[in-house]
Amino acid sequence: MNTLPNLVGLELGEIQTLLGADQPKFRAQQVYDAVYRLRVPDLGRITNLPKPLRERLQSETALGLPEIELAYDSTDGTRRYLLRLSDGKTVEAVWMPETARATVCISTQVGCPVNCGFCLTALLGLERNLNAGEIAGQVLRVASDRGFTPNVDRLNIVMMGQGEPLLNLANVLKATRLLTDPKGIAISPRRITVSTSGIVPKIEELGRAPEESRPRLAISLNASTEEQRRELMPITRKYHLKDLLEACRAYPLRPWEKLSFEYVLLGGVNDTDADARRVAKMLANLNVKVNVIALNPGPGIPYRTPEPERVAAFQAIVRKSLPCFLRKPRGLDVYAACGQLKRMELVTVSNPR
Ligand code: SAH
Ligand code: SF4
Image 1 (cartoon, protein in one colour):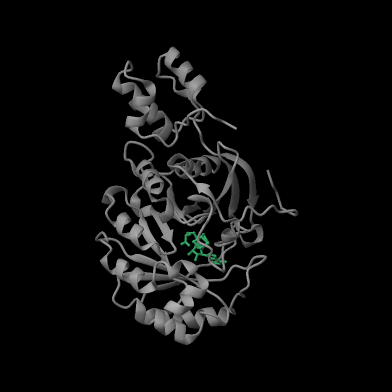
Image 2 (image 1 turned 120 degrees about the horizontal axis):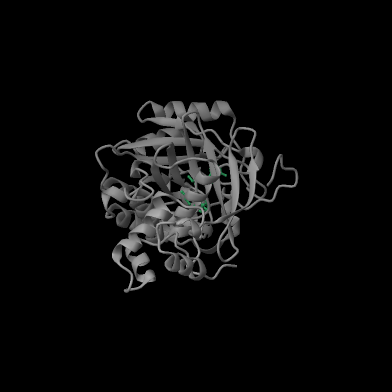
């Protein structure tokens, strides 16, 4: 366990405070630059610092990137990481390469308190929130493992791993400030998406965040009526579907932006033609696109995956009035797909590290 203060996660002013008032301002800038823009692998590599300061940093602080405890490779190129944090707890991140770009899915909490009936992460409960360095650090660790330069190679980030991002909004926003800072990691906010189960007051708060560092927003809808949603996502008892849709209507989109709605199809539960028609009607007046995904199964999940024909029929109905895409599962064979992140230890892995 590492108990030294971590540098990853600190903003410029915080680095300045850490270095102390006797250090000139530009020293903090040099450290910030080394950590986020140059992404040095260890503190000894910040060679433009005077030796005594470098040695002080090395003995009194840690860089603080999460460590790769295990990585599982899927036959489709997806890699699921089990990352170890400073206190020994672990979370998952998933790397999904495509032809000319890649997406990294990161966690925002250890476990999740929201308890959706179709999601394996729910079975963990909430262990704790991640801090900003642990959130941004997953991106840095995975990108460096894959030889990717976040702002040059086309890297998309989705906060769809373990956790409910809007129940940890302050840390999520600090992480996106670090990820988007043009002087640091410099990823465009257009490439970062936060997904929520519908924490209404936090959607409003997210809408007030500065545009230059605000991530895109995806809403996990997953039901076509208030009653059905209450069954599948108990959070609906606290934040009603009606109010969620109202918050979406009031959400201040940037000119290039649409809201995304995610919809997990559960066989025989929320996947009928009537459901599809209700979804299309419900979202008709919003600037949205819809992503449907067939349930990824897992031990203890009391739902079934619908047939491909049912999925196609649902999509076809929604697509008559809204942009609607089918999300293919990635990394199913290594429990890396949506809703499967439960730190599953695999006995028969193809190539663990
Ligand atoms: N907690 C946030 C983000 C993490 S979940 C949220 O719920 O939005 C990311 C996405 O995975 C959500 O859209 C969720 O509805 C979906 N999901 C959860 N369990 C799933 C499963 N078993 N199969 C497919 N998608 C699932
Ligand atoms: Fe939490 Fe999202 Fe899973 Fe629901 S779907 S339990 S909010 S991680």
